[in-house]
Image (cartoon, rainbow, N blue to C red):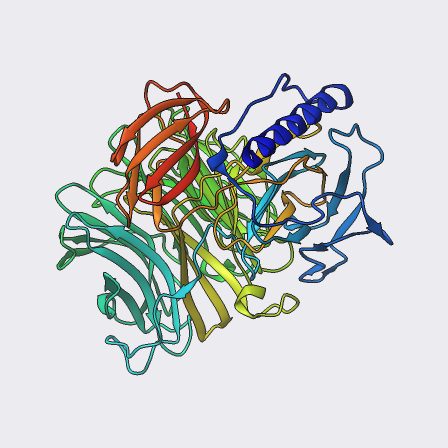
Length: 595
C-alpha cells in the first residue's frame, strides 16, 4: 500500500509540474507523463531542502558555493532568487559565475531529484555529482602511476615523470608509457619507460644527450606498431622520430628520424588514421629562439609508412603566441578538426580537409581555459572526448566532456581533478594540474592520466578511471528550459549546479517537484556501451539472473534470463531503465538507445 501511495503521489507531482510548465514557461516538450516501477526508487534517505524557497540574507539554505575563488578571481559565484524569467516550477535560482567552473552545491545522503530543469543564458550549464573532495562521483579515487625510481639511462632517480601514453595489446597486456628524467624536466638525460600490467618500469627508448617525450604515441600498423616520439637536444632543436615495435612490445627496431626543420622546435602531440589509408600528424613549430614568445605555427604531415612524410606546408598561426599542442579529431563530414592551445584564454580550432588537402585558418572555440595543456580524441563510437583546464587564470581544475555531434553540443561533463582535491592551494601558481591523456579500454572504461606539477624537478603522473561516465547532464540550448535526468552514482556526496563552458556564465536552475532517486549505481557492475545501438553488454562480479528493459511508461519491453549480451537493435530510440537481478540484488540503470 505504501508503494502504491508513493507512486500515486509522484505521478500527481509530475502531472502538476508539467501542467505548470506548459502554462508558465516556454519549454517545448509537452504532455510528458509516465509511471515508474517500484523497484527504481530508494526511499530511506532524505535530500532536505532541495529547492530555493527559503532564504537567509540572500543565501540559499543548505546550499553553498562550489568555488568562492579560482586563482586570482575573487567572488566568482553569485546566487539570487529568480525574478525576471518565466518560471517552470515554483522556485528557481539564478547562478552567475565569472569562471567556467562555478556554481552552488548541496550535500546529499542518498535521495536526490529525479530530474532538474536548467535555463542557460550565456553558456552551457550542468548537473554534477561529486565526491567529498569535489571530483566526479563517477570516477574512482586517483592513484599515482609511478613512484620515483632509479633511472636506467642516467645516474640518479627520476624527478620528472610525465607524458602518459597507453595501449592494450592483442594478448590483453596493459602497456603504460611515460617519459622520465632526473634533475628536472629540462634535463637532456632521460628516456621513455614502460610499465606492463602495472609492474616495475623498464627502459623502453633512450636517445643519448636528448630528452625524449612519449608524445605523440603509438599507431597500430597491423603487423607491427610504430611509436613516434619527440626528442630535443641541447641546441633547442626538436625532432620527430619513429620506431617500429613488435606486436608483443618486447622489441624495438629501425629507430629513425621522421621529420625536422633546421633551427626549429617541432612538436606533435597526437596522430590519427584517415579513411584514405594515410596517417595524419598535425605539427606545431617555432624557431628555437622564439619558443617562449612565439609565434607558433600549425601545419600538416601525412604518411603511409612512417618512413617518408609529406608536408602540406601551408602554416597557420593565431593571435599572441600562436597555435600550440595540436590534437586532431575526426568529424562526421570526413574532415578533421584540430584543437590547439593558445595564450588567449581559449582553445582554437582549425579544419583539415583530407580530400582537398586544405587547412583552414584557426578560429576561437567556446572552450575557455588558461594557456595550458588539453586533450582530444575520438572514442570507439566516433564521439569526441575533450579534456581541459576549466578556469581562466590558473591550471587548477581538470574537466572532460563528450560530444556526439562534432562538438556542437556536449554531455558527460565530469570534474576529473582539482588542486583542492590534491591538497594544493587554489590561489597560488604552483602546484598545478597539467597535460591530460585519456585511454578508452576494450570494455569502454576511461582511464584518465594527468600531471601534478609542483616544480620543474617535481612532476608526477596520476590516473583515475570511470566505467559509467556517459550521462546527459549538460544543458546545451541557451534561452530555453532544458530537462536533465541523471542517476546518482554510489559515493556521491553532493550535487552541484554549475556553469561549465565559457566564462561569465549565467543559468537558472528550477526546483524539482519531487526527490526520489533511481537506485545508485554499483561500481562492480559494468553496462556498455551507453548510449547503445545494437547490443548492450553486461559484466558483473555476481551472476546476472535476469534482465528487464523498462520504458518510461513503466512497461517491460524485453526480458532475458541470465544474459550478458542484450539485443537492442529492435528497441525504439529513447531512454530506458535496465533492471538487473543478481540473486537478491536488484540494480536499475538508465540507458540511452540510439538509431
